[in-house]
Image (cartoon, rainbow, N blue to C red; front, side):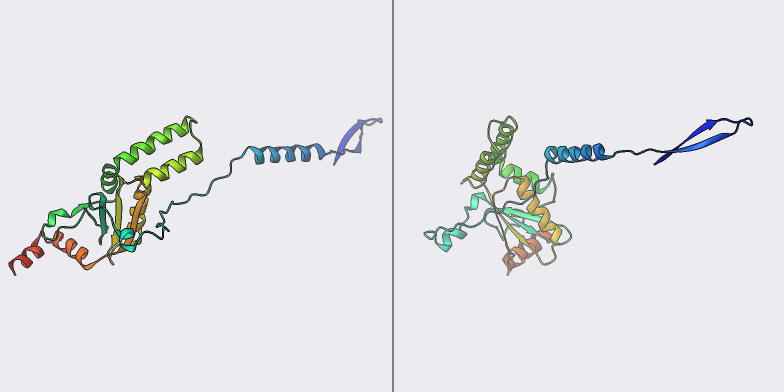
Length: 217
């Protein structure tokens, strides 16, 4: 880097230009940059990976296959994912003679979420209290996760059975699984839809016409 200095002199007032070399030392700037990088590395919180909790089946060898698949009817709710973003559900065991036993709802806060929150109200309230305790630093993050897992797998919590028709979209299944997490549903399973379930949907759309025809025959 150089700078020019003008010097006046002579009879005609001519000026002479004298070049002076100026050296700038950037070493302190490098040190400061390294200090800033170190500061931000120590103070920045890395984003934590987001995962979805999956309830795995029990490995207890003393439990028979019938006991593993047994679900208490009063705590069971079955979701039927139909075509054109339609969603149906029934609680307990299905009633094939009464088409009104099957209910139609929608995906979202005012539909499936409201149904699941009402069905799982006790667990939802307990988890909400735990979240407040965590915010107040009364319990650690590990204790929070452990207690939430115990609440979700409690005996009085509902079991959701998800069945999708061939015409249901993949997004419908994702939306249903999202509601499981939002509503703190710890026990749910995805299984193939049966012909009897498809009959329920067709009978519902026909306002009970199919079951009436079977009764007449």
